[in-house]
Length: 150
Image (cartoon, rainbow, N blue to C red; front, top):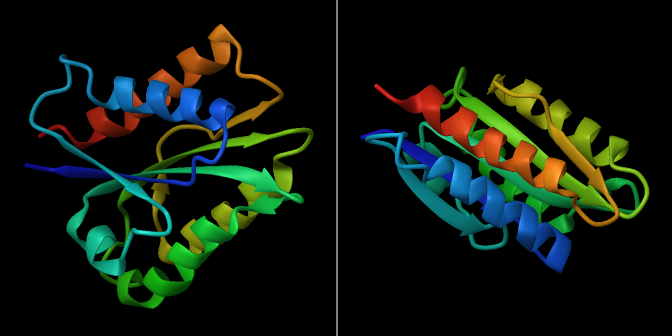
């Protein structure tokens, strides 16, 4: 059974709402035979990434960059995953108070180096997530999970 790994740093209520919407989309009953694993970024390991068939990454934009927690995951997992995870699908959601561009760019540089395939545009939210933002998060989760269905 394909495994979807959701690696997230969720320190705020806004990110919690986005995370829950992503999980809801990824675990929709119409998506069959995909195991969804949720792992906080500081607990996620290279072994977790190697065991997954696809990824969803969630991070706040802190001072214009991805969180240190997500960066720490990438620092530890990058080289073990470099050749072994090429071509695997991923999605990204980011929350920031005013700007998420730097966080998105940083994650995209790393995922480009890993040769992961982005299957849905990043979800970027500033301020509190609206109903449309949460729907987009749900769709991100569902799209990445559906991409793994056999």
